Image (cartoon, rainbow, N blue to C red; front, side, top):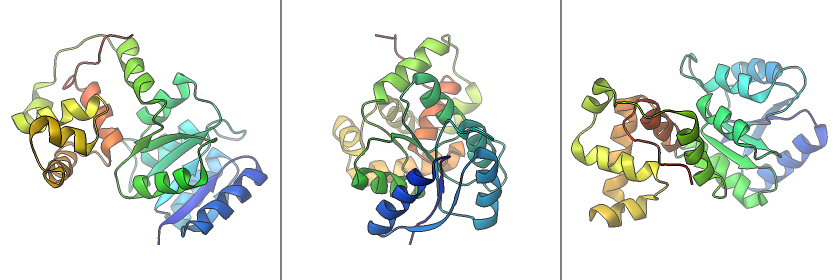
Length: 221
């Protein structure tokens, strides 16, 4: 059973999440009311996923996410950021900090539960209404750069094609159709790519691809 730590400064929100996730067969092992407390509790409890709010007194969720799941984290814990605010700054900041997903708080209960499971499984998730905006934000913030030769050297031509399509928001089925592959083959390729790039999920693989210039961010619309 997937073990979850809930982090939100409002007790009623934590209680609501606990009821929702328990009804969906997930195991809520603890909660926290601030970013600082979240880091401490996560290290004590070792949950499979931390469901993290962004804006909290006593330590914000972005900083806590970086400590738990960022590039320098020792024994990282997957984080799903769930926020009332869909501001690009929060979405982009959460993903750069190492979050495996970002979901809005008005998501349906079954969507929240599915997102927790996806992040736990390393699949990653960004709310479908935000995906294009996240990509556009990369384009706005990052000047075009040459690809890192070391990063390019990690991947085969086929793997580079898959990363390119993934970074445009394509699903496994869409990637398979575009490259005339079986979806199971795409999934296997992605697993190997994430191992090569030391990324934990699809979302962080896209962040890696943009950061290393492997994929050029599109021109903002």
